[in-house]
Every structure is written in structure tokens, then in C-alpha cells.
Image 1 (cartoon, one colour):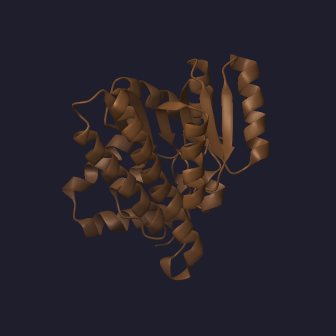
Image 2 (cartoon, rainbow, N blue to C red):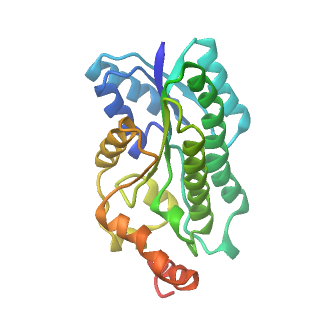
Image 3 (cartoon, rainbow, N blue to C red):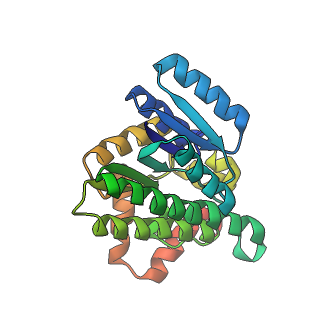
Amino acid sequence: MNVTLITGATGGLGKAFSRLYAEKRHNLLLVGTSEDKLLRLKTDLIKDYAVRVDYVVADLSKKTHCIKVYEYTKEKEYFVDTLINNAGFGDRTDFKDMDIDLQMKMVAVNCTALLYFTRVFLTDMLKKDQGHIINVASIAGFVPGPYMCTYHATKSFVLNLGESIAHEIRKTNVKLLTLCPGPFISGFVSKAGNDYTFQKIKPVTAEKIASFAYKKSIKGKRLAVYGLNNKLTVFAPRFFSRKFVTAVSAKTLKKGD
């Protein structure tokens, strides 16, 4: 059975992706850390869209849990024809004050798990010469981010990884899109402690981001930056020094920098 696998499925953009792909009549395999939330989302999606929905409870900061998800797809004989690597989180903290365990967990979720799923499911897609992958990066991946440096670094990893893989597989029918949204409404802000930035920039809905990504993915695009202002944000730095760009970025992340 073909399924769309969505990580970080129960909140914000993940939930928006889940509803969108259910509406498009995709069978779903949802991955998240809370079984209660996964079960509620599964029940709602089946009721609203009459699609098949399964889930796996997994902490993607742990390699063993990533492997568990992949092995589950094999056990159930699922073919993941659409993979949405959405799971991730941020933390706005001065580097000297950072909780190192939290930062390493962020790298594991934002980078390592995404790398693992992209690698193993890409192999299966290439065998059938079909499939779509959406890796969720951010406009943060285009610039340094003082006071949120680990998060910016992880999204830069996602951006560079995705564009490179997309080039390598360009002659196949498997397509990889790197999605780079700006601020959108989700639980990210409270978890990251980044209220200051979101007070300066009006976020859009997660549903708009998901719909935008779906259309770009279907078209086979490699990179998608949502919104004109965000496109200008990632384009403008090429005209300035890295030092200047870093200083401007810092001012958007910490009051009084």
C-alpha cells in the first residue's frame, strides 16, 4: 500500500500537511512523540476524509526510533511514495548559555533523522522510479543566526543537503523539494522562546505553507521559499558582507543587540 509519511505530524505544519494530504486521498503514516495526539489526529482524519491512517510513536532524536519507523513500513509492506520530513524545533539562547543536551537533540531531530529517512526511503523510491520528498528547512538556513545559531545551522544543513540530492536524482522521476518558510503560526515560538522575532514579523497560517509546498512538490520544484518578503530576505544578503548580514540577523533575534 502506498502511504505518505509525515514526521512531526501532530502540531502546526505537520498537522496541516496531514489534513491536506488526507484531503488529497493519500493514505497516511503519521510519526510523533505523543500517542494521545496521534490517536486523536488519526480519528479525526478518518472521520473527515475516510482515508487509511496509521501511526508510529517515535522520538526522532534517537537513531533506534528512526530505524523502528523504517522497519515498521517494511513490516506493514508500505511503500512510502511521499515523505515529509517536518519534525524539528528551535531554541533562542545565547550560545554560552545553551543547554548542550538540548542542542545535540536539536541536531539529531532537525538533521540526523531527516538525513536517515531521506536516505532509506529514497532507495525505495528510486527502485520504483517514483516518489516525492519534502524536507522542511527555513529561510533561517540562508543566513547566520546569532542567539539561535544551532537552529540556523541545522536549517542550512537541510537546505544544502536537499539541493544537492535533488541535483543527483534530477534524471529520475523522484523529486525532492526543500521548503523554506518564514514565520508561520505553530507551537514553534513558545518552544523556541523566540517571541521577539515573531512580534516583528506577522506569521502566516500553517495551512498556507502546506498548500504552497504541495503545489511546488507536484511540479517537481527543488526549492520553495514562501512569500515575496521572504524571497527578498534570502536574496538581499548576496549584496552585503557576511558580517553585515550576521549583524542584521542578530537584531531580528535579540532585543537590544
